[in-house]
Image 1 (cartoon, rainbow, N blue to C red):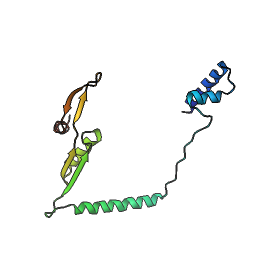
Image 2: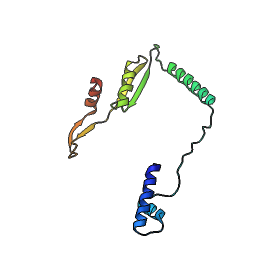
Image 3: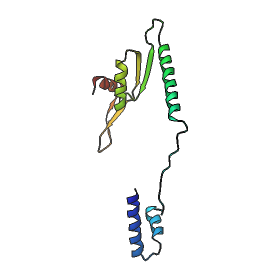
Image 4: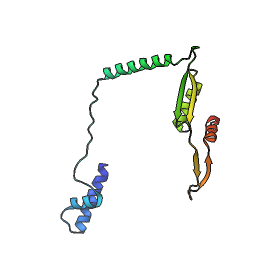
Length: 142
C-alpha cells in the first residue's frame, strides 16, 4: 500500500510540474485522495490473560458437556435436535455429513431456500430449484 501511495505522490509531482503548480500535495489530495502521512495500526491488548482464557474455555466445555448429557429422553437415548442453516453451502455440507454420522444426534432439520439459476449473459432465470430438489442434490453428493 505504501508503494502505491508513493507512486501516487510521484505522479502528482509530475502533474504539478507540468501544470506549473507549486503544491503537488494539493494535487495528490484532489486527484488521488492522498495525504502526506504514514498510516499504522495499533492493536488493543486483550483484557484477560492466557490463563484466564484457558480457564473460561474449560468452564464452558464442562457446561456444554453437562447440557449435552441432559439432552436425553426417558429411555436414555439422545434427544438432541439440530437446526442447520446454510446446509447446501461448502461448509454446511460438511457439517451436515458430520451431524448425520453422529449417533448422539436424534434429528437434523436443514433450512433450504429455493435457488434461481440464471443465464450468465442475459441474467434471465433459466431454472428454479425447489428446496426439495436442492436437498436431494445435497444428499446425493452433487
